[in-house]
Image: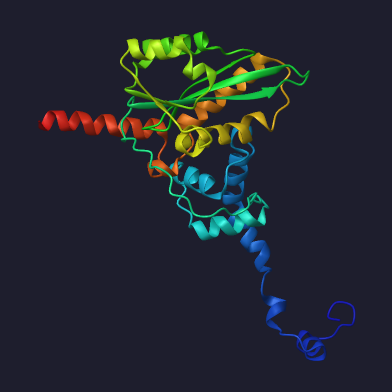
Length: 276
């Protein structure tokens, strides 16, 4: 009406019964998009990494905080939802209340380890097994061993390698698989004065730390990829393990990295020894 009918702005808005402020006010959506562009770029940079594609909102938010980005969480959440990054969570049938035994693990490095096996297949159908080993006290991934067969002797050999690199724990928490109950494994633990803590059959929640680790590894490494060789699985797993220890904030550690939490414990122990 203003441009084609040569009407004045006031008359055109009187006829349409619209507010004249909308003529002069800039588009707020465009202004907001410009202000939110740094957050959009930062979130996209996180989720585009294949090792972080399954991270939820709080993992991404605390990763931004560790990178020095101090944006308000409500603003980040609004943009996170606008980008359709909020993934639907699968819900299971609600069970009655249970009373699980607590996992009494001190916040101490190399006190308690746990390990468990997983399985998957290559693109050509070849099955392979995965042995995950973590330090429960600092939530650090110690090793991810991948091969078509992982007998008890291979488990002992892996533990010997970790012994040369970082020493041995006082306790190892495992389930009742044949590798964990074998003579080779039990005699090795007895020779090194390591207590074996077996969980009750059918109660994987008693080994919750490694089960939670297995879930992250499954959803972020095994499920998203089609592997053509074992070397490809090993390379991706190694890169993911480094990211898990050096880049991924953990809620159970006060949203610190496992490596950072481990250094913090070492600093506290050294200061305590100096005071003593």
